[in-house]
Image (tube, rainbow, N blue to C red; front, side):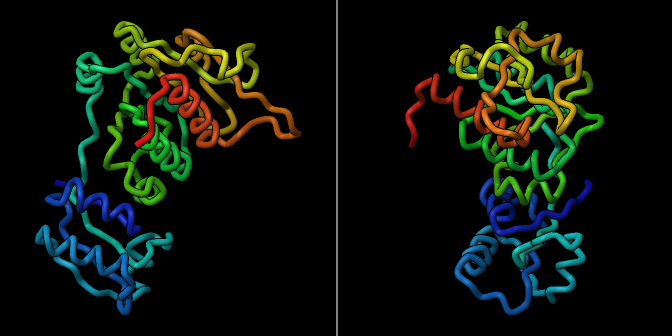
Length: 249
């Protein structure tokens, strides 16, 4: 069974809370004794996870010189949710499903931010193509701040076919494009929904766009032509949440 490296306090804490059996070892930066680190150590001990102290330079190397906040974990790699299993879950859902589909996003920071927002609005899954798109890398997990452990993540072989499967389950597929005629708040986002955003710069691929029931755009009143994909995803996801009138906790 393969292993992966996860770093960052929020990401490692989320693993201990949701998949503690997968955490094989936690390595802490020597000399760290702040409250959040001590809480992490106590949580690890509750689950019987070994904790070791290591020099900062060693953790830097393990984290690929990324910001690790003094915490690196060795974890049994999770198996992404299968496409068929997601469709079964959506079919059995008691509330209108909300699925975020990202067509070729390659920046791990963008995917991590999208996962975090998807968790915040209660999305049922984040779906990406298996090829030419970033997966659940350590950077993604760090940026997601725990959301990579709470939001089902699905990699599909054929995105257009997957969108057809969503439509067969009565999900309304809404794409986003700066040239669309309809503004995002003019579209009906209340029912079963698949929200599709394209890659950084290039946007949705032609075949993906052809499988959308409607395409919307965000109003842009300034000099910039487009927003970062994770920002755009946040705006449209929260518009869907507003339309659904879901009360906050």
